[in-house]
Length: 269
Image (spheres, rainbow, N blue to C red):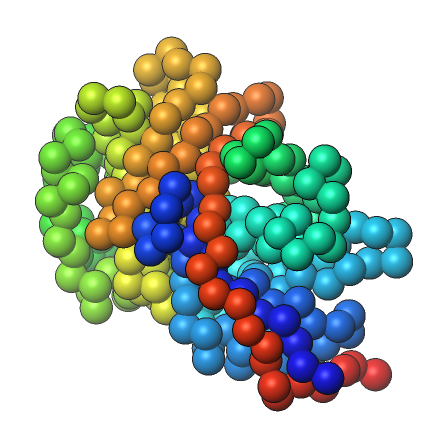
């Protein structure tokens, strides 16, 4: 038996933009070590493993090349794109994912996919030692957002021009470090996200980050639905709508590769 494997550009309007995620569809009961090994082989920011449950819902886990994570937006978008694209679930039905962050859903709205994720609270904090020097940005404010740190910069140009010391940033005790500012032109918010401690020097587009940035900037700008741009080299666009303690993340995805994994997964038990 071989295992289906896909590469999907998420939060992308055309191929080779946005954030690529691998999506693997193994049988239920595969081991964590095997999933981590596959993620290392794929060497993408995230590899999603999607397994159908007896009730028709789906188990979903996410791995960077070196560690499992609790929440990932772009790989969830990619997983939904694969399930609908491969006819494993009708596009008219909501996809229900059971994850380490609880139940997450994906809904198709034409070509667009909307994810329903939990809000991530932002709390002000002092910058950890070495952070400002490693990032190279003088912050207006520093925040803790779940496992991440968020630095508000003076303007969008500062965000786009950030050139951090990746090795020094990897020593900061957090999953990753975001730098953000109010956007300009057609975008309300601009950001970048660096996570070298998790094996990702710079993430192209980070859905989970916007579970924190969305509510924060929505309150600051008094805008209910935000157009957000992540200013990585590949770039990506998200539409973010805070709703109480949930956040809707909207975007599109493009499947760019499909294949079969020949080395099948050992089952537990």
